[in-house]
Image 1 (cartoon, helix red, strand yellow):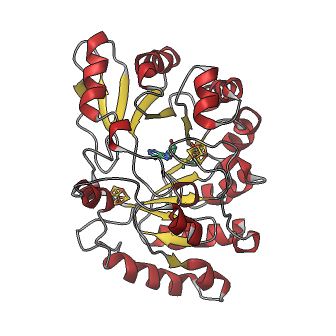
Image 2: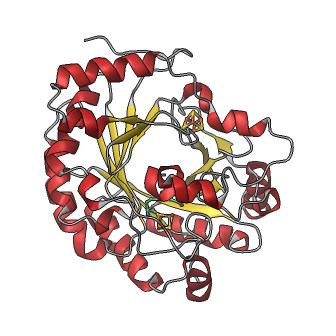
Image 3: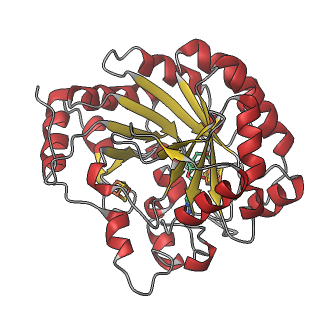
Amino acid sequence: MTAPLDTLGRPLGNLRISVTDRCNLRCAYCMPEEEYRWLPKEHLLRFEEIARLARVFASLGVTKVRLTGGEPLLRHELHELVRQLAAIEAFDDLALTTNGLLLAEQADALADSGLKRITVSLDTLRADTFEALTRRSGLERVLAGIDAASRRWPGRVKLDTVVMRGTNDGEVLALLDFARERGLELRLIEYMDVGGATKWNPQAVVPREELLALIETRHARAEPLPDRERAPAERFRLADGTVFGIIASTTAPFCGACDRARLTADGTWYLCLYARIGLDLRELVRGGKSEAEIAARVRDVWTRRADRGAEVRLEELARGPLVGLETLRRDPHLEMHTRGG
Ligand code: SAM
Ligand code: SF4
Ligand code: SF4
């Protein structure tokens, strides 16, 4: 079957699968509220259902899969899902994004089941900042998780840092040193006005230019690397060989090459991080449709895709949070922690 292209000529190459909307942290940029409305348990796809959908996406050209959440390691026996996905030949990349809290105890099972790469979110090296930012303790466990990841996926561990002005922007150089000493690739992410970031304001964003200027106060010029392809991160190399990335989704989005779609834990498929409406694939899977029938539906929807959410946001003059609390309560699918980062 030929791979479909959307209305802007973008293929469907990359699928992020959220395996739970639950999380054991409450990061200020993602889950700043006291109360959340969770997806009903009976709606969560079973591993066999996720694997079935993954095969559908593989038949349409997806080669890269990333497991996410919420916190994916909260999903019971996650390594079993990894084993089922690793058996799909079309996938040349099978990765996971985690906050790292439960990683030290799960790294062996995940690596043995076929997980190829891992990204750990690390916003600070200070316990007090960690607690203020996540409203939970556990920095030591995250650092132990990063150590375990370095042992099991040498050369294939990334660290993701959301930089917020006044919170952790003073630690960018320390985080770069931390990553460099361990041979990990740090990626600095601009704070995004996604659903759920209800405290977002433009002043709290540290833009790409400022991050580069800050790094160049300590290091000689950061040389841009040419091989970006469809990846959201721009990569740079420092004179000592250290490679790091910047994901400038807020000030310099990269929608034109975006081949990513997202599947929530209850089987809703979104064509863009900012999309308001998704397609209910759970209904199709549980309604007895064949993989070919589901593939035909997915293909049809993808060929009509015109989403360029972050670029559209850039055109907003008075930019504030994407959606208000009332709307999020009505539809938790709009939350970043439901949709997966
Ligand atoms: N819980 C896991 C974690 O934090 O790594 C995986 C899910 S989390 C939603 C995935 C990524 O989204 C994380 O790296 C997080 O930093 C990022 N993220 C969440 N809210 C964001 C925001 N408002 N702006 C930029 N990145 C955000
Ligand atoms: Fe933080 Fe990830 Fe949890 Fe969001 S889902 S609160 S980014 S750990
Ligand atoms: Fe892709 Fe939407 Fe993000 Fe743009 S905003 S890069 S189209 S997911």
